[in-house]
Image 1 (spheres, rainbow, N blue to C red):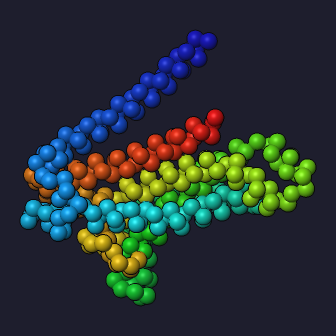
Image 2 (cartoon, rainbow, N blue to C red):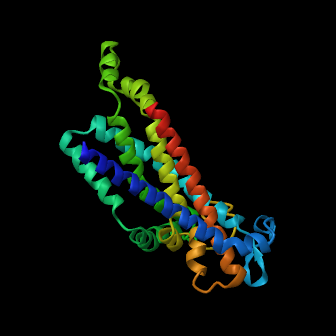
Image 3 (cartoon, rainbow, N blue to C red):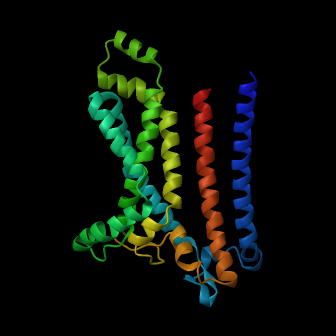
Length: 280
């Protein structure tokens, strides 16, 4: 009993520390961006002609659209691929093949993002360039992000699928349902909340990715008209310009970071609500 109380106290302290760190990061971003939020027109972040810090124009919308489009495209590709991988591991692959495939997916999750970016820059971008120049584009960013979020979607979907109660399988068998009928009509609806939460967390990862996207997206501040146009994301813009930014320019970069953190916090809150709903 004493050990349980000590362990509970340690876990609570760790959770409290994590919350405090997050609050400190949020307060730091808010403090550093305060001069821009109070001294510049908030509407200017939406309506300025472009992003030209030396001329005092700070339109964040092209970079926000690039961030959202790259993340949405990656989710549209990564979600079905990750779910298919999870179904293959849990229901269709022989045990030895399922274990091997899962280890490969977990290995993919451990590859540093700069390695994905380097591969995309040296291999993927030239391939796209042969099809439609310049190669460094929204499409390259989407494909690299898809590879990066695929392991998270697959692993969380596997956990959700394996958590489905055994009674549901027995009931489906008693009704004479086929394997695919059981999966489509019973298992996927039962695991829907867990799978959706994993996809939301993967979307948060895609929103905040920096180095890989910076290396393959082309880094042109514009609203893309096609998948082959170069884009710049908010995270990539911070990495490119924070080293020399001063004054309002530096403060607006922190506004970008604050916006990214708010987006990720919203997605994380949605995932938490879905998990609570599943437990209920």
